[in-house]
Length: 125
Image (cartoon, rainbow, N blue to C red; front, side, top):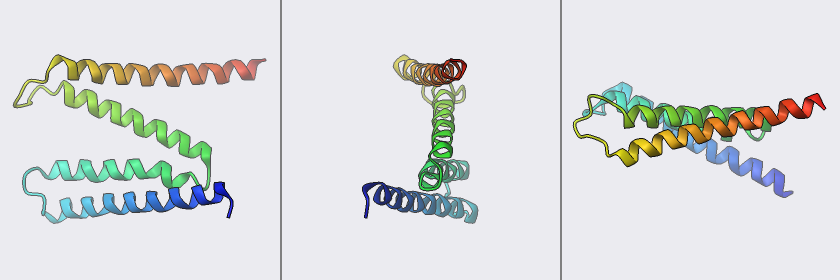
């Protein structure tokens, strides 16, 4: 078995396990088993499904997997910003947490813009 085929099989199996974990989290939240905050159960389930999407798409299309990975990291950056600047938080967040969330979002956006700009300039020449 070639290394590329083995990599595709392993990523698909890991993606399937993570997706199954996400489905279980969603079912637990829907059944009412999460007593403290059911919304957190839904968010955890969707987060696992979002993380599993690029792994499940990789064996079939690397281009789609890359796009899904960028989408997942943008959602992660948005979630970090939302948690860092949440106004109804019982405790105040330290400034370092807010700076880290902003830095992650800005670096991610800069990276995506630079890649798109490089692709656009490569097509023009």
